[in-house]
Image (cartoon, rainbow, N blue to C red; front, top):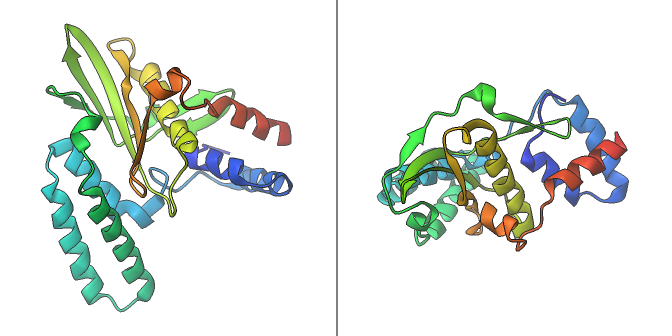
Length: 225
């Protein structure tokens, strides 16, 4: 087991007691999770467009992507591909009313490169992968602060408690890699489920409004191993 994704942890939690052991055994055989931001390549069109719109502060990029995907649907003869592009379009259309500005501070942002060799967090002996879309620093009231955002999609979406697991990993990732230079602002450690428009930040976890599930899930997996 080279790495475990947050999606793996959530999938495990959704299993019945009877099927959890099989899931863990299969997980140990995997070379590594292949999905990106909880959704893999299936959702890459909408996720990349939303990520770009967030960074550039330009929601017109969503309309551009919708037009591109509509053209691809016209020229594809494969029903599976047409359905995939249409689902991505549906998410983008629904997301156009989402206020991306509320997900970042109202000040100038500096976006940071995320080295691949720092994407793995060791939590209770488990290598958990953290892959937020953007890490950004900013100055607020004389304080140098940092935040990050992770856009995720899954068919039928995630529960808020599950989405909180992504926000939790975002916070831990920033603490591990950036806390020597910046204050990690929990309000801007955010996970967004673009399928259903839900968002959770780490402040909701810290305040107890969203449960902390990472450690308990890992401990349950370790008991089965």
